[in-house]
Image 1 (tube, rainbow, N blue to C red):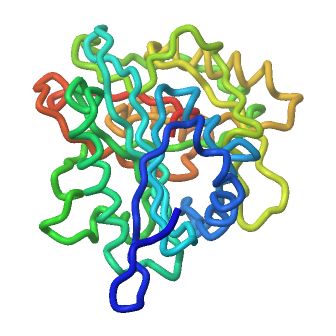
Image 2 (cartoon, rainbow, N blue to C red; image 1 turned 180 degrees about the horizontal axis):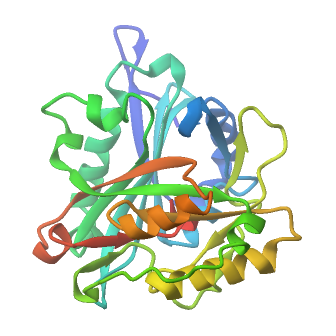
Image 3 (cartoon, rainbow, N blue to C red; image 1 turned 180 degrees about the vertical axis):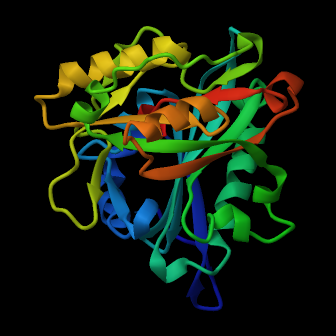
Length: 307
């Protein structure tokens, strides 16, 4: 792809590609991905690798489209828009998940990140999936200074989004999880007001993303072995029982048990903390919706296999 020129200088060009057209940019995407790290608690951080088939992680969620920005022939930014299922009050709806925004270090601080969001809206306006979506959302990991959304200009596309939910993210030792003996946590939940961002009921109770989305923590060369929990319709004692059972099943695999808990589920989080299970990080869901049920949802669930 050739960039436009002006005054002898290259200009940024944008393109929207379906998954089956992405393979020619695989190496460029891998190189770009190596620049990025994300915050965990305690000053720790992690990098992400989407492996040798960059699109595979996104394809497992729904219909993925990729927004690419080039400066001349150099890939300088990427963003993914995935049209996927969500659930509100037990009813399946559609959402547009904006994810994986990456801007090369040489082009940060030049509003390219914000232009990628504007570009996602521009492309979206021309597609039926945009108009059929009850929710547009993105997820950010929270560092000591918040996230990029909290530092975005007032009149930016990011300012159109509001906070839907904040999650504690766990990378838990399965042996410690399996050692929980007291399961009496009662959660009063009106399921008609629960927003489910990962309603993949046909999937197994655990999900392995090896080779699709690997996490490399604190500069490690080998990825952290993770088993992601798919327990999105369980609450209270049933949720804890599944955690314990899963911890026992994977205890010999040397994998960490990865799951996310809405911070409004205070009793559950307190019970986990009492048992020595504390979050490794925090993530915020930013959403844009005209659906009152979504905006007023009392709890939100999400699988870490879709973050």
